[in-house]
Image 1 (cartoon, helix red, strand yellow):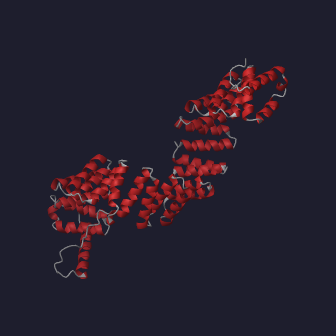
Image 2 (spheres, helix red, strand yellow; image 1 turned 60 degrees about the horizontal axis):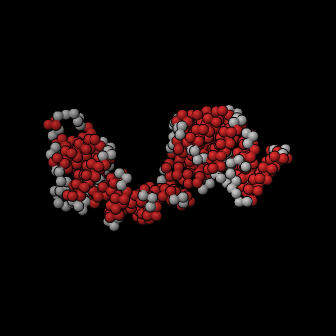
Image 3 (cartoon, rainbow, N blue to C red; image 1 turned 45 degrees about the vertical axis):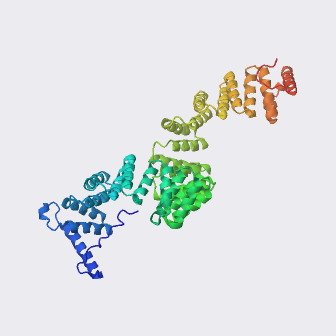
Length: 502
């Protein structure tokens, strides 16, 4: 809503009494002449030398400037008006509104305070004062002002609507929704109230109500690009990506220069696997906002998924150009270097990312794998340990840690790590089979046989792997006897445990 909607600079007493178009045009001509005169006048003269500064003329001149969107001049003349009419609450209120419009909130507060000192029960002035407090983030004080205005004038819907906006900013969405729902039946507020209601329901995760509110809003205002965009956000949060795409495209048809809509359309296309369309969307976003770090990063992700490693590296590098502390882009670029078999460059990027965020288990995991591929087994083990400190329930990390311990010939520790993996994922044959090998290499034959039997039960192909890796072991009489004991226990219904077979 426009705070100047009620101003009519031509609602003046017509001395001729005829209200003719000629008198209207004469008045407009007079104001334009006055504007020219004021522009040319030296404004540092003493007030007494500015005899033409009549408060009534200044008031009409301010209104004329507002009506014709000459707001810089309107503010200037409103300041002159308060000089010449310092006891007019309306003059201070008008000045406060213009200062607020120019985002000069501190001075706007002072102007409203001067006005309220003169007229403490002007509910419109109190409401506008509350709006400025809200703009400055003083939400509790602002709510007090709106309640004060409503106590004076309970039917002040502008104060009520402003209170709803303030409650929304304070994350009190349920209370705000109640206010907007009350205002929806009022024709003057229906469109805006439905829009805000949609936002409240979205924030409350009541998606169906949010969609219904935005749909009703768009019935009243079908060319509101923000309405279509917000509706797309709701569908996106519901995982209904194709509907989200349709909404973003409606927003873009109305307003092509809308980077956020291009960006989110790209994300929605990526979510449905249409990576080329996603790439097109991110590029359009970057045409309008070439320093959008998230768009560069997600463009890199799309290229990476298409295995276009070098294009991805270029995009991640651009993201880092605009935000050198964007750890996700270091990670993405490192992953591409890994894929191109440049593990040293990959590790440099992983280290840069970890210097910014050392609590990412994924980063430590990627670094550990790259170190292992370089043959730096001891360093890889340290990185795997960091992964397990951060995510101790990651069974695959326990397995890779165990495999690396085997590589370092630390068989007993490896057996324990495999055990952790199998405890977390009991029906995963790889961890049992790996532990069987580690136990065998530790000369713990009985325990090894138990693990082998478990692995064979889960995945029969592991027996062929075993015969291929240990072609002579199957012929060892002692091992065959252990197999028979374990198999007999299994047939008798006894559980296969990791305890020694007696």
